[in-house]
Image (tube, rainbow, N blue to C red; front, side, top):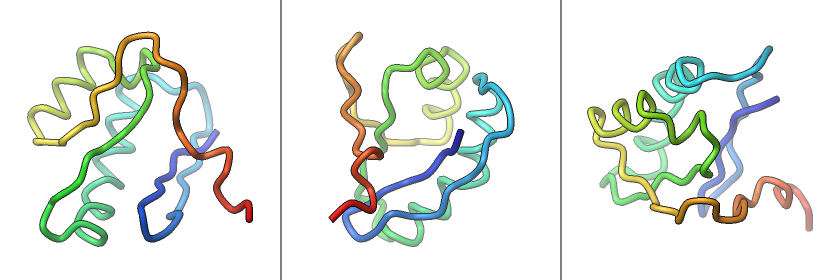
Length: 92
């Protein structure tokens, strides 16, 4: 499994996840990678972070970390279909 990002400019680097992911692993991935993406692509911090409604991404611990770190998130309705574009990255 991989965590990665896509912006309006590019598909970025991917981080390999070597086992099942839980909230703490996801938070650690965000701690390590997200600020770099925001600083590089959104220097004015005009962005919305998007992930889906996976239980790991929407856990209380993850939501608290995002709030404490002022991560601006796109709000999705519960049980919404997966609208990520990762399946199309790299395709013409």
